[in-house]
Amino acid sequence: MNKKYAMAYIIDRCIDCKACMVSCKAEWNVPEDFFRTHIDQGLKKELHGKFRMDFLPSQCNHCDKAPCVTVCPTKASHKREDGIVYVDRSRCVGCKYCIPSCPYDARFYNHDLGVAEKCTFCLPRIADGLEPACATTCPGNVRVFGDINDPASEISMVLGAAKENKQKVWKLREDLGTLPNIYYIQK
Ligand code: SF4
Ligand code: SF4
Image (cartoon, rainbow, N blue to C red):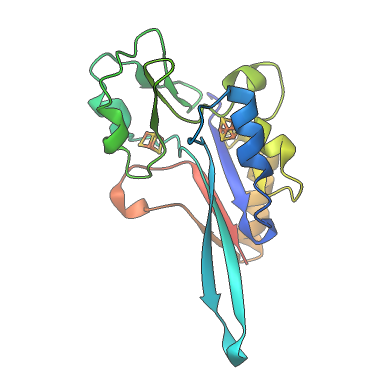
């Protein structure tokens, strides 16, 4: 069976330190004003007048039915056999069709290179047997990366344990039919 790379976020562990955003930017020399991964904040009201702040990481979801792949006229944006949605810079003509097609706002236009850009799950790093930079850097171990087709991988075990413990496991905007591959795990 092919590998299928995915990531799970154990979101209760996120402290909004933004180390993932910074390490990603450094790893990929991401242009000023842009990031490949983000942390959103949400204020939740709780009982007895107390409030709770939630931090929600996000990045490209490496969707199985990715609109960005469908609209790309040159097939620069494509879904690889290992599940990664990748932009082949040598084929990207900078038409920007893919950027508004992404319902998760995961792409931007790299003016320096004239191509569309987004998370690649750090493809060169994983080819070298390393984790994506964001997962390595995260001090809270929020980000668990791996092959969900391998039952012995850390991500499979984390998702299995979440199911066993009846934790909430969800993905962003599943109603859109894009079949995203970033899992959110919450108490
Ligand atoms: Fe950036 Fe790599 Fe994390 Fe994607 S996986 S957000 S490219 S550090
Ligand atoms: Fe494409 Fe957006 Fe899905 Fe990533 S999140 S695969 S950029 S549609």
